[in-house]
Length: 149
Image 1 (cartoon, rainbow, N blue to C red):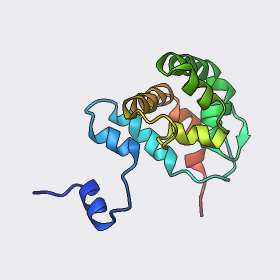
Image 2: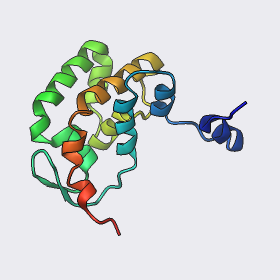
Image 3: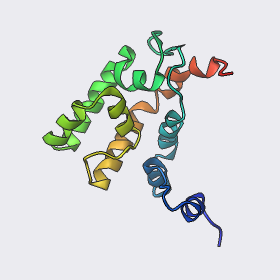
């Protein structure tokens, strides 16, 4: 029997849990490419000054900028928030709205939060992946051109 990465990691280190996006990807046959872009965003370090490929603003956190501040994505962001409000009840929509920028982005990227319903958490992650996947390359274009050494 072949062992999966998840099996080996959990057997070697029982305190390490696989990331929620990875678990979601392994349980689905669709949307894997969109979810993989969210995983790429998890690995981007903060503090690297770069120009946004969409709005041309100079920024130091491309991930927070893409999800919260990029003016070129305002209509996408507004539509996504309408979907979130329709998906979650008012209490959780307000709780999300009251999060700091970094907390909100962490939730969008699969961090655990007060919403204990795994199905709704997965739906939220899929919704975020759907809305931002087509803009990922444009936002990140200048980031991948810089030398990180």
